[in-house]
Image (cartoon, rainbow over all chains, first blue to last red):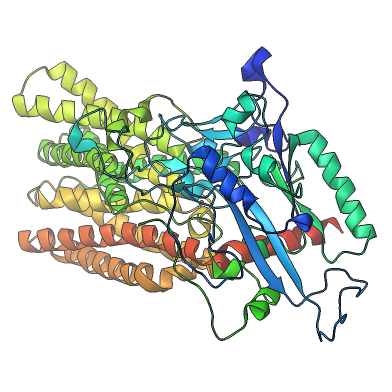
Length: 306
Length: 316
């Protein structure tokens, strides 16, 4: 149970269960300070993973028309325009008569591949599993669309796909039990198929500025610390790492970030906690409630049949 | 339906002003709303009836109240038939419902619950069929014993299921939800048995109804008070309206059962029906509260920021 390994920073049972097949834990370091908002990651992800189109809309929210991660969006670039200086030394302010400084935050969001993953813990079919690379993947041939992982993710990453089923994906059992929509849950696989072949994930491959860096998690964490120290020395406004700490509520992310503002500005939770952290206590409380209900109902028989 | 959220654009301020003052990403939710359909709160209700009915049935058998035992057995068995049908219907891939039985995971209340429901439903329906046919008495008694023991966990695990999520109003209520669902189950099973049992044998069922309603109202009150800011959703929108209906129906129904349930069949049946309506509304209110809690990012972000601030204070 993940709660028992809550402070180790290593996923429960991984990599032991893989024996000789275990690989180093792989992940992403997404450095938003050099993101240029080109959305090549969104496009590359869609193309490689054959993710269907999910509606075209203009939100009016800066350059973001994707809005959030979901069943059909596994990379999402957030855009926030701010009257705040990019650097605290005032270098970027008032250069051409502009009265106020302006910075444009861009962040390519993705599944965090948590050390203690709520989605994986609650999945009742075993569809969600931990790969030999330490990443978290949904097996599409197992998922039965129960939807438990959707509210169990502290980041709102997973969602059910409501688009029509593909033609070659007809129900195997009684036709009456089949639905016309896909009905399963989908999310980033950290390009499990590409990793198997020794390639980096599509988004990292496509990223033209190396804002998305792929590699062994331990090495990425070191690289991120160095980058943060550099930005701090240069006087940037508000740089911080998000999800790099193995002692946080999800045991650290497999895909973590360098942000320039509070996490909630980018739509990220400030202090995410895996729901199953509280489960041992919750089970005890449930067992006690069940016992008390049992005794109370028996007590209702005191006083006879009438 | 594509799952795309509605536009949130606030045209009264420029996009730059909004970005500068931003305390959540354009007001969009951080955690996802559940994708569960109305089958799920309906199942919370029927599963509760099935679980608590199994207990009523067992104790009635042991105390020699055969009339009440039979009612509770049939009510429980019926609820145990409806429950899995509701759950299968809610799946995105109903034909894959057996995938629930590929694994047993204690980290997933839904996995544990699927097994409990399988055991409880199998046992109570075996017992009901054998009772009806009047055959294989030893097998029937064994099935009754299994269903008796599987009942209480069946009635309470659903509270643990929704508390084990990232939805603030559910997760923060983890100390109350299994108890609230247990109390609601006792009230609904008592009410259902009262309807189908003559007054002379239905005393324990009436007392279960009244006791269940009293406990549930107290727990609901305690939960809302302790949740504070996060619990606001129980006073707003659909969850708020259903919450009022639930309390009114449960109180009125329990009062009718308490005051006139022994003398008047009409009062017993009418009061029990009101209690059942109230319990269904209660489950629906809790269900809807989860959606409302997920939709507004403040409920996710603000308590987490407070938690961070408290931790920072403690370390410095």
